[in-house]
Length: 141
Image (cartoon, rainbow, N blue to C red; front, top):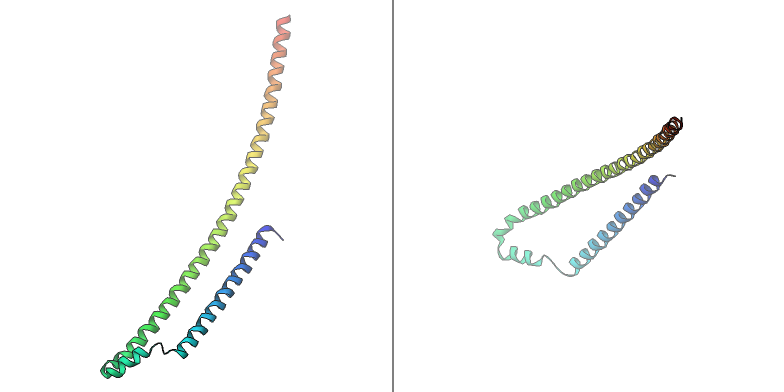
């Protein structure tokens, strides 16, 4: 298994465990709120207001609709942000892989250039030695 596949598998397991952990925490919070609201009448003040002012009970449907709309809106907002972050993460992974490939290509090109330069330098040394040999031979004559 390649390093990239192992990294992806580890990231997936970590994301699943984080999501599962968040789900457990959310369930515990909801259960605690339900228990607290059962023992303590949290919205008792609203009931008292509506009993004292029966003409205001007309607005209860608007309050429920507003709360429902806000909760649905926040759900859609969160879902869109989640999709956006998922897309961005995939793009980052793709860019990192491209960057790694470019770095490997650059290193290979540098190795080839270095090898070619060494060969050229060796050939140049050899040619200089030949010229010096010919000059010294010509000078001795």
